[in-house]
Length: 130
Image 1 (cartoon, rainbow, N blue to C red):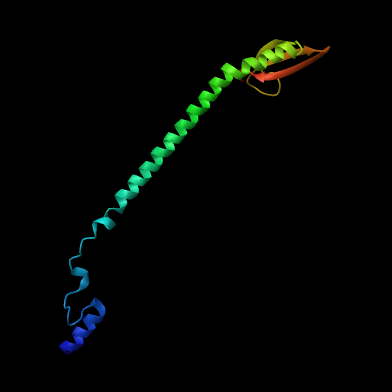
Image 2: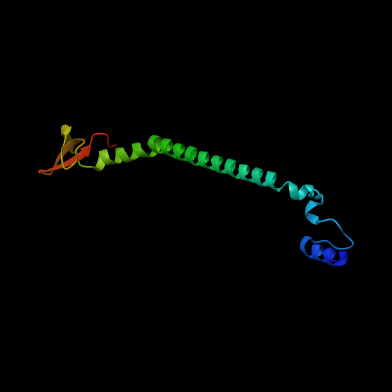
């Protein structure tokens, strides 16, 4: 084989040309620009800011919700109970008993009865229901 044919064959396979006799795979790579190289750091900072803002918003939601509940129990509910006391019909509820197996459930449940207008109504509640 002649040297021109070998060079041409090598040039086709290893991207060698007569002007550039070195294979590009073994050539030293140039460093990227700092703006392009810094993208991972900026992306991580952006993700961190997003999670921090999300955490702050969740905390603000719960603080606002707690403030509303405190205002509601201090201001609005006493007015509602006063209106019920003034215009409502008095009724007395009795806790009949608490025992395991009341109703179809196997846990501890309580039975509550309410007599109103000559009728007796009964409810079954779990012991820890609010």
